[in-house]
Amino acid sequence: MNIVCAADSGYVQHCSVMLISFFENNPGEEHAVYLLTEGLDLDDLDFIQKIVHSYNGHFFYCQVDFKFLEKCPIKSTDHLSIATYNRLFMADLLPADVNKVLYLDCDIIVNQSIKELWETPLRDNFVVAAFEERGCCAEDVYERLDYDSKYGYFNAGVLLVNLDYWRTHNMTQAFIEYIEHNFEKLRAHDQDVLNAFFYDKSVHISLAWNVEFIFYYYGIIKKFGFDRDLRFILRHPKILHFTWKPKPWETSCQHPFRINYYLSFASDLGHQL
Picture 1: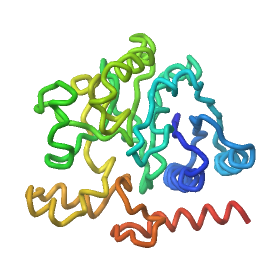
Picture 2: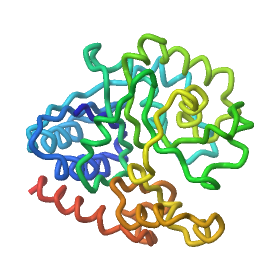
Picture 3: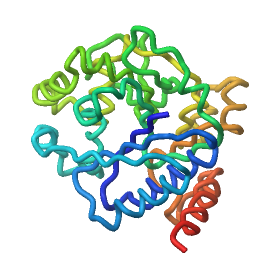
Picture 4: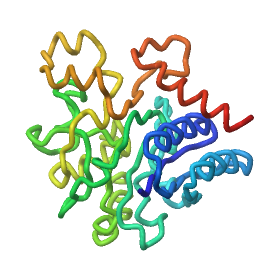
């Protein structure tokens, strides 16, 4: 499998924990990891590379050109890093012979084999993604992004990407031009951009592959009456996504699966000893 992640210096530990959870649950193959970053020091790169190599994986470091990032400013009120935009440039940053990748956010824990997800047919679609449960995305999102709510809205933290299609349609340039003309509309930054382009060009997958923090709020379940299937998914998440704050590494976090982060973190410490 080709795994892509993006990190700055503040997320090296969490990127490492995510990768360990992936490798521990997907043994027996020589996976490739592509790290997108606008800059990490050699110690950080060496640390992540050693983890990947310890699982017989292949590690590639992809420097994001500032010419891309300068088109993607972060508002002063945002609590995000510019790294949030890095995934938009995958088609230009990765080798031309890499035609399919699985993008994973760094605040993720993989709980089982993702072979089934990797083998999901892309056909003529640009991405495979888990679309958020009703009520979990901003109410104004469809008006802002100018498409019908019947299509839904996906979270971009777990994406199976058809890079061939991205290249054929020159998506990097399309993304940059969209941001330049619609920056004030964006609330979730690159995730909004991806939905604006791919809302009707995506394969829907089970929420089990991207179980977000918000799904565990009792008020959300009570308000929208999630069905039995979703309740099962919440108890048996295939991929946990620690969206929102507090994050599992923060003392105030009350996520029911916070321990999963620390189990992988313990393995991370083992690689440092």
